[in-house]
Image 1: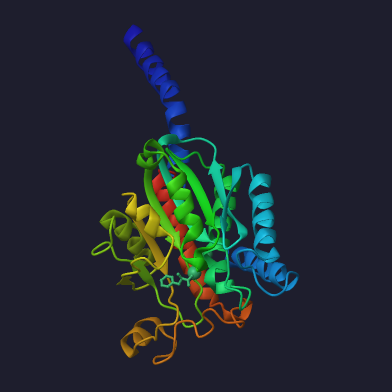
Image 2 (image 1 turned 180 degrees about the horizontal axis):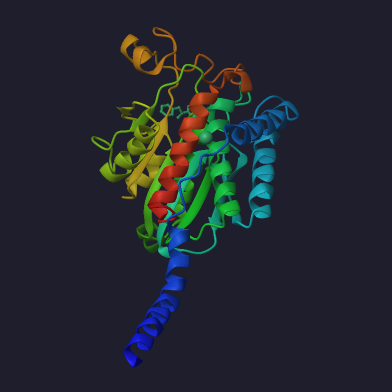
Length: 316
Ligand code: DPN
Ligand code: CA
Ligand code: ZN
C-alpha cells in the first residue's frame, strides 16, 4: 500500500518540477512566423508618402530621410524596443543610423539584422531599400507581438547614406569597441527584396570576407522550406554587410536583384521575364510601390523572420 501511494506522489512531484521547463521551452520552440505581406506593404506605402511629402525622395541630407527615421523610431518605441539614433556627417549634412535593441537575451551573443533606409535623390526608393527596411520593421513588430524571449540578444540597424558609399554602416562598425564587435554573433543584410522581376539570391559565403556557410545554409533552408529555388550571389562590397565583414563578423543576406538581367534559366525556375533587369527602376524615379513584386516581398520577409528566429534561438 505504501509503495502504491508513493509512486503517484513521486510522479506528481516530477511533473511539478517539469512544469516551468515546459513553459519556457514552449517559448523557445515558437514556430517561425508567416508574416502577412500586407503589413510590409503598408510600411512601404508609409515610406512613399514620406517621400511625396518631402520633395520626392528619402536621400541623405534631405528632409525625407530624417522623416523616415522619425517614423520608424516611433513604431519601434511603441512596440517596446530600446532605440538610439546615431549621427554622423557626410557632404556637409547630418546622417542618421537607427539602432533598435529588443530587451533581453545574452548580450555577449548579439544577432544583428540591418537594412539601409536612405534612397537615392532620383525617387522614393521603395524597392531600394524601402523593401529591406519595411521587412525588418515588420519582423521586429512580430517579435514584439509574439513576446519572443530569444536566447541571444536581438538588434536591428537601419543605415543612413548607404547610397553615398556605405557611410552609415561603416560609421556604426567603426564606433564599436573591440569587445562590442566580438559580441556580434552574426550580421544579416537585406538590400532590395521586392524586385518586380525577382530573383531569389542568397549571399554566397565563398569568396566573401567573413562569409558564413551556416548563415548561407540557414537562409537557403528558409527558401527551400517554401519550395523556392535559390542561387548564391557574390555581393562583394556593394552593401552594408561589408563593414561587418571587414570587422570579422559572420555575414549573410538575401537579394532579389537590381540592374542585372534575368537569364532564361533563371526565368524558367523563378518565372518573370528573361533578358530584362530584375529591377528596371533601380535608382530611378519609378522605384515606387508599383515597383514591388508582392510574392518576392512576402517570401524574402518570411525567410528573414525564419533566419532571425532560428539564429537567436527564438525558434528551433
Ligand atoms: N547596394 C545597392 C544599392 O543600394 O544601390 C544595390 C545592390 C545591393 C546591388 C546588393 C547589388 C547587391
Ligand atoms: Ca508571409
Ligand atoms: Zn540599396
